[in-house]
Length: 212
Image (tube, rainbow, N blue to C red; front, side):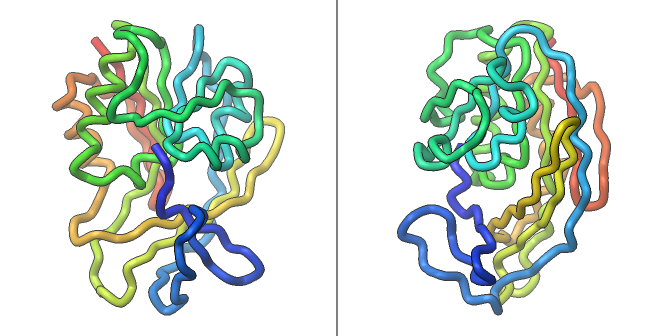
């Protein structure tokens, strides 16, 4: 899933990463303090499907050739580091047969998926997972839009991997409806997942789901 509203900080100017987007008026932006976020290695057998794996490709950098990264943006995949297999693909309509993977990940990607399509992503992940397979999610609690003039939120991170640090920022448009971990948990249950664990770290959260 492409980060169509992903924003980079470049030479003190904030612009949309995707080609053709205009500069964003800084007056529209709500900035959140940088968060140090530890990303430990995790056990996984077989190939790992990473949704939205372009850009920084944190999961690809963490797990290397074990990862198949999908993204709607060929450019973000091409520019992403790491040795993952990279495929242009829509997470709402994945071209994998049922039960293809034991582990699927979404690393700060669901925040970019339109709310009306998030259940489709959950359903597709459920379909391509083997029984007993896990869906690992890392994301942010996005507040509801409270001021129409401040409709872009940027979250800064320092991801602490076992062998490196990755400094980055993620930006997305705010909407009238908040997007919180509880909302994703509800969608996960609707798709048929069991929730094995949840944890929060400031405005960020992680969640481990299991296909029964």
